[in-house]
Image 1 (cartoon, rainbow, N blue to C red):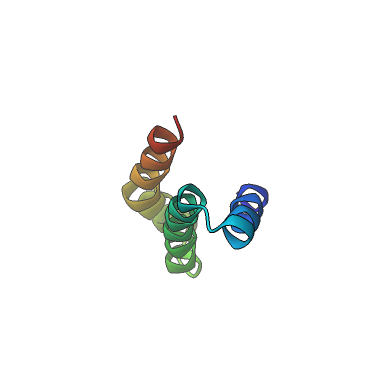
Image 2 (image 1 turned 90 degrees about the vertical axis):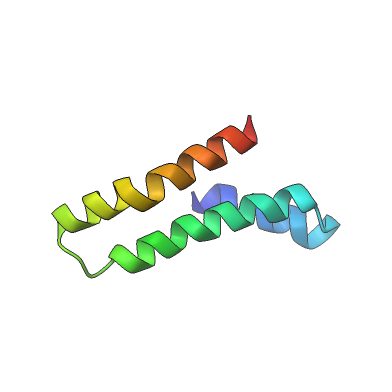
Length: 65
């Protein structure tokens, strides 16, 4: 994910691309979920990732298509 984020960041920084900005928004939301689950047990991390990150990942995927 970090490699994709970097490419979108570079595209937005150089061209002010609205598409790149939207991608960065989705990726930022996924990173926020990871910050929230960092201190939890593995079972709780999995549960919250399924609850919060999975819909975001699906939305990002649909948007990219």
